[in-house]
Length: 94
Image (cartoon, rainbow, N blue to C red):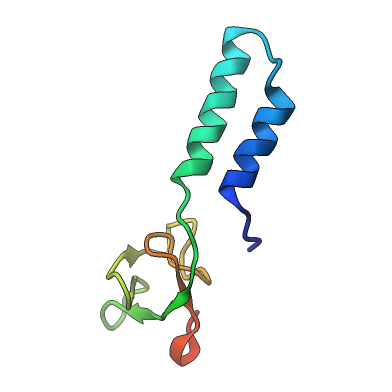
């Protein structure tokens, strides 16, 4: 995982594509900025762990915000909670 600054990404996108023309291209550009802004912020001060939901299940819950993760989620047992940004490093983490 590589952490990036979403504001810096927006600035770079605007600088790169400020002169774009064409409706389809412009629509895709604004969609990319929207996606960047929807990404969760990482909170380096918040720490948690993935807790197994129930015996025999692969589902886990964030100890900080109780967000459920299943093994079908793209961020399953990631190093950071995709909802609250907690670093998952307490008691072994993920």
